[in-house]
Length: 129
Image 1 (cartoon, helix red, strand yellow):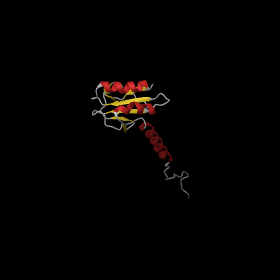
Image 2: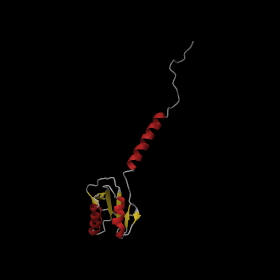
Image 3: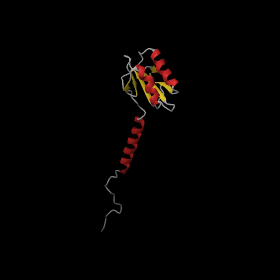
Image 4: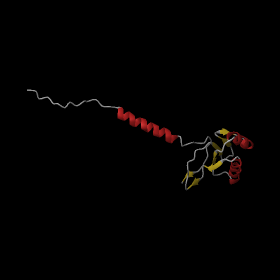
């Protein structure tokens, strides 16, 4: 008398679906992490109601002790225009200003004027409320 079952269950577990999920998560985190671009110098950014994310080509940072940097390279104040000119040569670029909230507005206007004079789009980095 043969009372064996005709349906045999395979006890092996297929890992292919698990690796697909891990691969998709890896791609998601790699793509979203590229939108966050920290500046090289520590800056306490001002707050605003809306904070748009823009793809920056050139980053200009001014700290509260008036240290200037362009793309994480510390530059004297007198050389800012020359540095921006070489970075924005022959193209309209996006310049993002990372300026500490304790820095007077005249310094922001000066750097923004230099960038606008080079026909660049100027944005000010802020943090949301």
